[in-house]
Image 1 (spheres, helix red, strand yellow):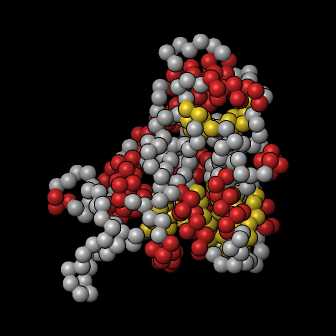
Image 2 (cartoon, rainbow, N blue to C red):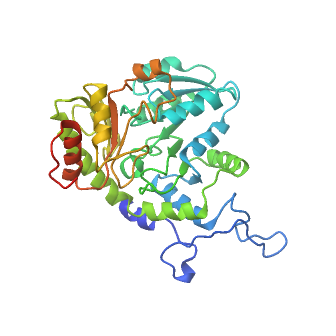
Image 3 (spheres, rainbow, N blue to C red):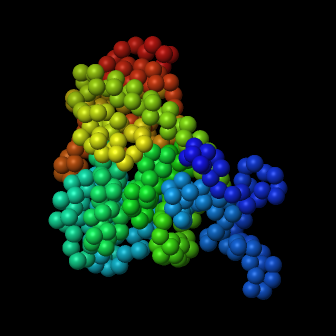
Length: 385
């Protein structure tokens, strides 16, 4: 079955006997037992809820996993994931991670006894040099946020298998529509479901997906114990959002390619980070392991005043955190997504006061470009913006 069809019909509706096309929202905290020692399969919504179970099955099927766990946010999913590890365990992570992930690792996970090394995981020789006896996992974002570095996931998984390590991949930017880390050899996939899976900037959610029974069992225990489960209503919003994932991703990528090409011709734009441009250093790897490039673009302008002027002048685009929704959002990473990273470290990674990040939405591409043009260059809008 094609993935675009799976987005719509990706799990069996266990309430099909009612004839409901839309999966019901089971807004119930608890469920009655038919008798002593008997269960309907649902006991308490922290453990499982029919609406949440449905979206979990869809996401598991899309990612080619055997189990998916739906959390109340992407960060709660990552926090639960860290409970797989013990005091003294060492994790090698992509250095260009979402700032919230770094904040968790540095302020919570380190306090709990975990150790981290950050590196460009696209450079496997460097990753190999960091492996030591305490190392338990390689944690990858690909593409990274916000510098759009791409790791060869299959190659990283081959290295990990030779050393008995887990591979964890954050697949938020490309989603299973464009990239399948489990098929490439990863053990666990992470999603901020808030982003493309939901697609409408109206709910928070997170997912962990695995194709290993042992990890599913461990994660399910952590899940029911720590309790950050996705609510029935938010689960329903995810079900509805995923139905249009394929058409949204294709349209957003089409728009992003047009925007990226327009940015390349702008005098005030000094550097563009978009994995769909052939001159991106990881373009060949993207072509090999993904079926699309997504719609995330970072770019560097000539000076700080230009960046702030653009953010002040935009009229159609929205200056807001997050990504993946139908609206085009523009973010200033140094003040928003990566504000908690020390200045020296931010600058070393290229996150400076001239860097901007765009999540390209579903608007007409010419309207997006027109708004960027008037904000960047002071030209009058041609599209009523």
